[in-house]
Length: 400
Image 1 (cartoon, rainbow, N blue to C red):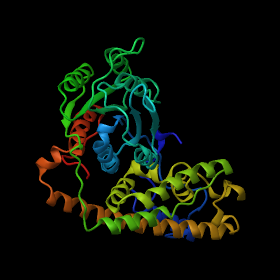
Image 2 (image 1 turned 30 degrees about the vertical axis):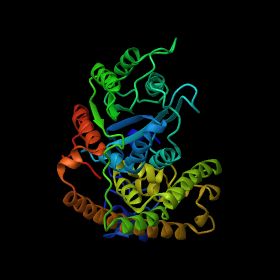
Image 3 (image 1 turned 120 degrees about the vertical axis):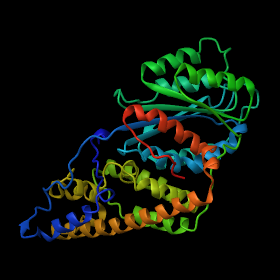
Image 4 (image 1 turned 180 degrees about the vertical axis):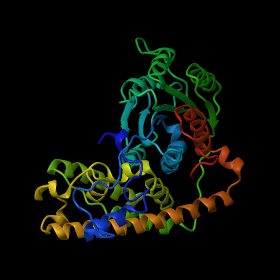
């Protein structure tokens, strides 16, 4: 699905009337007016602004603390990015790097709306190797700028966050170096921001130069990442609701499409099995945003697609239907969709209410200075400043 054409009012998330509209469709009338439950589009599609962010992350052994911080806070960082007015479509990517002689030089996870995959990839990275000074920063930046599927739209906010504690190798013959790579980034409208972990002076000098050459920002955090980690009384309940919300998905399409979506479901199950409740709560809050619907539903979730008018129920063959619907009559199928939509709407409202209470609790627990000095806070302030040129307006405080 074209990400620029996703609805401003994502079905079940941003319109309190969506589930009611589906229910009215099922009943067949409202106020004496007959409603066609199959053909009536409920939501008008229109463009949303786009945000594309790639994290270029040193994964050598000295970075273990910051990798853990990035993993546990990727959902709050994503929520902050997605909280602009107007709410954007969002894609995120990752370039992990080490150095020649290590297990790998670079690993690229392309831009995607699938934040579950991003989280699981971060979880799989183990901080190893390195320890010998400079790393393959140039190769990683080159991959981020040239091997990632950046949008060609000049109105898209495109940003790279380079995160590491060691300077680049400048002695690898034939390898593009950062002054040239920065020029390539500028030509594509990509801003490069540099986050230094630790306080090596030679790293600071080059990180500052890279940021300056690209009109980006430089900031420094402790080796641990200065990440905000708060446990709240609402985490367990939000996590349980998040699992219940995932269980309302009804994937449809060809056998190959459903197999692909099942892989996504497998990643979600692993996330629920391994992630702390606080992380699951952050994921749930992200999934209540417009961009989060792209992560939660992907392309091929029937309740969302029927509600938005992207698909007509009668157009699907039996083989394309979700398994629970294959042996149902059309009336029973419509009833199941309506009931699932109503259940989903109720869960989403509960998550939104508890999520706001969670954010209020965090705001009361943390001083503004602590938030401002954290990894989350500094990334958020950078985005807030830079994305305003693309018409994206952010509040003064990030999601945590």
